[in-house]
Length: 194
Length: 249
Ligand SMILES: [Zn+2]
Image (cartoon, rainbow over all chains, first blue to last red; front, side, top):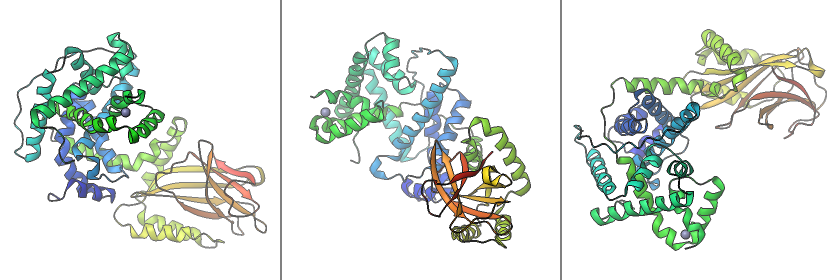
């Protein structure tokens, strides 16, 4: 199992091969878990629920992942984010109110991590994104936080910010461009493997 | 830049409706500026996900996740049942799983016993039995049960349907009793109902004692809410022409 590529493992999962799922779990749970923990603002129970749903989705997936769809980790995090947002939105409906929390990006010292190349590249990406964020304006940072991490829609954000939707849309475009430009200037681009 | 180009960012963050998404994808095929931008902006959006502090995962989580998945898989079909029927089916499923599950050996015997004395022309059954016998890894489970009751011409008839899950395959086994006999080309036809749509699930003729058995292998991802049975003047109809004589209660 250990020597198999992610793609080969997915292939086995489609054929109902449980050890392949366990191997993928071992490889990616830390990423999925940490990501979910941030989305739920540190709520362990909700995080568990998300992780369960993510791997259930992976297990029941009828579609074969192919490397043409980009890095597996990106694909997995997209699934994780969708599931987390579903959960968050469901709860917002239940509580009936939208809470605005402009929590600052916290900078916690790195924890000890495994010595694997994947870990290195993840840390590098983290470093890049945290650097890039320094170059965003305060409203741009807030937008990313609300949109990406808190799961608000653009129209909800427009309401929260008391700005027309069009303004928020163009702010999004500007923000993505700024991030992209920062990546390509500072690091020679984040576009690998394409 | 055309108006449509504005939707590029919304496309990337997946906030377009299905319709807008299709429109934008059409636009993208012909718009060079958007084509030049999309990959790098998409990457920028995706890199955001790495802005996390990696945390140690609790040791116990793996067992919890795996248990969840492999229990969930077995009850997935049951969970799709509408709330109203939920408690009834839950109860029934519980009862059945207690008594019969796992079924891998038992179900074959039941099916074969049911076969004896039947006027039978359904080849699907053979396939199902072979499939069930060959899969020794995961035992067959009853994931849903339906009670069927006769009406109209077949008031005395009754039956029971089992939705069986074997690994990834779902089969439906329907056992019917006290069915009025059929004449000439007449057959009973089974329909799976979902949101007002009917899917043909095969036909049968009962034996001289009014008993019938039919199995149907469900297409992948196919789900249904109810079962209806009609008396058709002839076989192979894709939509019912005859009267409904039985249905789920
Ligand atoms: Zn364009």
